Image (cartoon, rainbow over all chains, first blue to last red; front, top):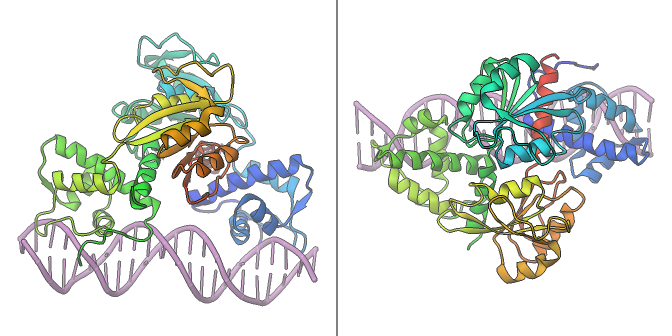
Length: 215
Length: 215
DNA sequence: TGCTGTGAAACCGTTCACAGCT
DNA sequence: AGCTGTGAACGGTTTCACAGCA
């Protein structure tokens, strides 16, 4: 079967594994490994060989039977497939600890992402800068900034009560993807893709597991 | 069927929904609502009624047929079930932006959690304090501190290369739960529960979705 | 022979729909 | 009558196992 460029719906689990796989391929490529089999990949990066093959099969045929995958080539194709071959601009709304942390973080700056704005509503923060020098601007300037710079991704690190309003502000300004860290579920809005990441849930999950194991 | 106190394995999806449900119950209780049906709960908090009932059924019978659930009582039972009726001590290893952000955050301090230590390997940070005043200590003091204070949860916010070593340090010191934010998968270790939260994956997932929708 | 790509089977979580308690 | 608790149906994802190509 030949390459399908547009798989219908791909699960989040799959895209997460592809990210992990790509990360692994970067390591292998840097180490000069030319080809590798799915089972070697699986062993090395703690995945499942059949699953790697299935995940990749969603997008076409990437391997060579009897040989495996060409590392350099697969890395390049995955990078493009994941949309990491171009740099995405990111606006962060909420310059609390987490917002500033993300603004400064390597994750949100190297490798395909670039923070182009950091906003807050607190007058005392406005005008200040994060540790690495990202200026904190007034959230009231956000609409104008969105219209002017059309960022790819909006990250919400504001308090829960502000989050829904900010999300719809981002969505209606045409920001196509929203990553929400506030502890409120923001529904997909106006065709924007929304991903909710509620850190409290992970922490409470651990508390739960501790309780289940006694003490 | 009567109450099962020990369901075998409960999915993460379930515990996340229970956290969300508990959050909702706190709101209802604060508002003075005495009883509520699963369908009203579902509507109000964007869940599914059958699923709420199924989730709760894992732990016993909580409702009253024909009436629904008594808010106050369910809240109390869920709080205890999730292990949130006692305060868990948290140690954070890695005082970068994210580590400090978590150390200061409401999530990691109110409602059942308390940060009791923040460690780093960088001599320039040691001795400093986070914004809210949590002192940053030398990671070399960590083993002694773990032995002395026996924290419930260890949070890793260190760079990827340091994470595995820190995880095994925590695990072998008997820290029963580990929350790892470093972009390396830490396997369950020495009977410790490990939860990996890789923020990069969420961001890359959005990049992927942007790429899939053209541009 | 060695490994991919992929149907088929197993597994798991969600949704449906209703029996039965209040 | 109303709503829970739950068996049964469903849908999706993971794993197995092998046909077929290099």
